[in-house]
Length: 102
Image (tube, rainbow, N blue to C red):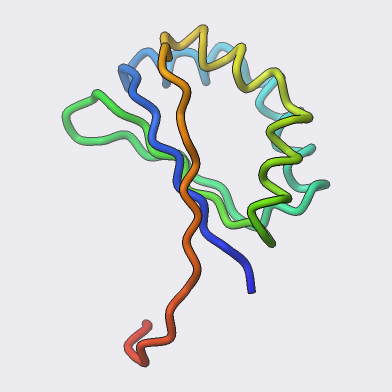
């Protein structure tokens, strides 16, 4: 069963969006690598007050995500360009079958 990964990044959302707009070629390279290494889904979300970005990914397992991060030094570089100063820590979640999914 796959896992959901959440990565909270303390960063100005507008600065993050600007970095994303300015680094599309690098992002496409990283996206292709993530898919090759097992990524199933990926999304960025910005919180309403503009102070935090949340990365939500689905991976086969935590180890696949870890290997991807090790193989992707560009991510740290882009985070630095956006103004990220604290190291984000991934949190992994497994789906629970409560019988109420829709």
